[in-house]
Image 1 (cartoon, rainbow, N blue to C red):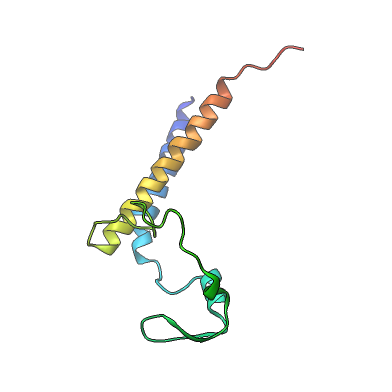
Image 2: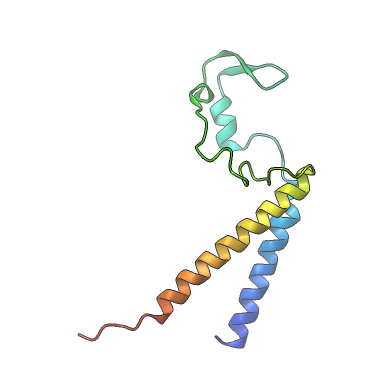
Length: 115
């Protein structure tokens, strides 16, 4: 690996870690586009429960991994919401970088077949 490529990858990883670890804590808790669309047509009480109407959200089902340690963009058991979100983002970036790097490393090591 060339020195410039190493610096480029390290810089990209650093930026991704900063965004995931720090900036993610300032993300809006308001529903995003898909959530807002799924809520259209229903009325809700103060607790966020559906009280009337008809919308896609009424068809929502429990996710199979809802009880996993990193479900909901947070780490279960940590009391601080920003810390929990930031750490789960950092873990996600590291896992994605490791998986992607491993795939590229394996693909690079393959030698072309001779015909």
